[in-house]
Length: 160
Image 1 (cartoon, rainbow, N blue to C red):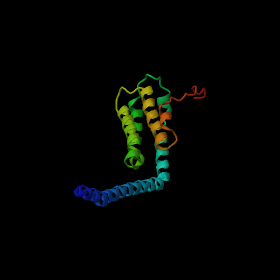
Image 2 (cartoon, rainbow, N blue to C red):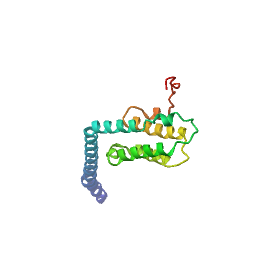
Image 3 (cartoon, helix red, strand yellow):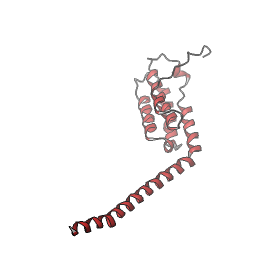
Image 4 (cartoon, rainbow, N blue to C red):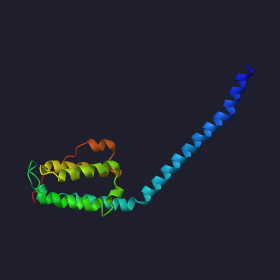
């Protein structure tokens, strides 16, 4: 009976404090890591916004594509120019530094779509839309539920 009391006292006096210390240390380390990441994200916010605006401009499809019928194939020269602009932004311009993992996947999906001869205007618009939706979500403009809601599109402009 006395041995059990000693074991309980040892657990209470040694194990609990050690576990408490380790848990507190781990929690503090995780909080500091999160704080450091948040500070970095805040410090890069202006540069990131500028880079994402650049990508937005690059992915604004030119009239030569938007004037095609939805099921029409997009010409190779148009696909090649858009591909080159995105790759340049992503690599030489350092745009990759500002994309989330999911947004990077959307960029890669768009590049894959541009690199196939069968790409139709409607498919290309869908890939661009998916990327832009992700950029809005990552920037805090959209909430998760809004990323799944379709937007009503305005009627075509009579002046174009």
